[in-house]
Length: 367
Length: 147
Image (cartoon, rainbow over all chains, first blue to last red; front, side, top):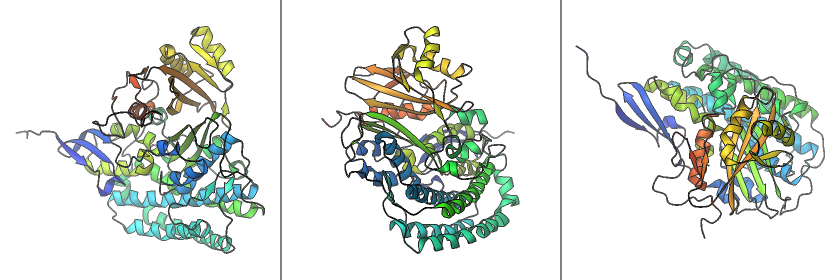
C-alpha cells in the first residue's frame, strides 16, 4: 500500500539561523523533498539608493558600509572608484597600496565568516566557526588600528583614504601574515577531506556553467563553476595589475567547490598583501579633493571584485553636490537568481547547505 | 583590461540589420528604440564577434520627461563591454519589453525597477514587487515621489 502524501508550505525565515540575516524562503515540501521555492526579499531594505540622492558625494561613504556589512572596505572602495571615475580624481600611490592591503584583509575576513557559517549550515555547529573567528578577530583588530572601527570602517574617501596607518600597523600585519598560513593549514587538516563534508557537499547544489553566466553570477559562485572570471584580473582596478596572484576555480560548481574557491582565495589574498607591503611607498594618502565634490554632468560605472562577487556603482551626475542617481549592482542579489533551480528536488537539509554556500549578506541583497 | 566597445562601430552593424532601431549614439553608449529592444539585444548577444553573454546591470533613471533604462553588457569571451540604453515616455504605467529570455540576470533587477521606478516589463515571468510589500503604493525611487 502506498502512503498518500500532500505538499505543504513552510516559511523558512525571515528570522532563522540558516538564513544569514533576514531572508524568507517560501518552501513547498513533499515530505522532506522541496518541490517549489520562492525567495522573499526586502526585510532589510533601507532605500540606500534613494538616501544617496540626498547626500554629498563624500557623505555617501558611510552608507556604503552598510551594504555588505562583513566587507565594508570593498564597498567603500567600489563607491570611491565610481566617484573618481566620474570626477576624474587621481589617487596617490601610497593610498592605492593601502586600499589594496585593506581590501585583501577584508576579503580574508569575509571569507572566514562565509566558510565558518557554511560549516554551521553543514551541521558542524559553531566549532569551525570559532576557529575562523579567532583569526578574523586579528584582522578586525588590524582594521580597527587604521580606521577606529571594528565593522563599518568608513575608511576610504574619494581621492584616497581617510588616515594613514599608525606606526605599529605594519609590524602587526607582518606578524599576522606569518601566522595566517599556519592557521589555514589547520582548517585544511580539520575540514578539507572530511568524509561527512564530502557526503554533504560534493555534488550537492550544482550550478551549471551556462546558467551561472546567464544569471550574472560572480565571485566564488561563478568561479566554483570553473569560469575564470575575476574583476581584479579581467578589468584591473586600482593597482591590481602590479601583483602576481592566481584565480582559483572549481570544477563542478557544487557546494564543495564554492567552499574550496574561498579557501584558495584567502591564500591568494595573503600573497597580494605580502607583495604590497614590500612595495608600499611613502607619501601623501589623499589627493586634494574639495569637501563638496561637483563632478561634471555625466555618468560612470565602476566595479570591483568584492568577496561576494562583482560589486558595481553606477553614478549619474547633474553637476550638483549630490548624485542624481546612484545604483548599486549587488552581487548577492544576482547570485540568488537561480536559487529555485538549484534547490528544487533536494531535501530540506540540503536546502540549508546550498543556500549557505552562497554566503550572501542581506544588507547587500536588500540595500 | 575590459575594453568598452566604441558604440558608433557597433551601431553600423545594428543599422544594417535593424534600420532606425538606434536613435542616438554617444562614444560609449547607444540608445535603442524600445520597440526594437529585444531584437537588438538578441542580435548583440548572438552575433559572432560581439557575443555579449553576460549582463551585469540593469537600472533606471528618472528624467521627468522620460525614464532611461540602462543595460550594461559584457562579453566574457572577448572581454569587452557596451552600454545600451532605452527610453520610455509617460509616467502613468510605462511599459518596456523584458530581456529575461536573453539573460536571466535581468530577473531580479527588472522586478526591482518595477518596484522602485514603476516601469512594467512585459514578458517578465514574475512581475511583482521585490523589496517592498505588495500593498505598498507608489514607486519611491521616482524623483517626484515625495512631492
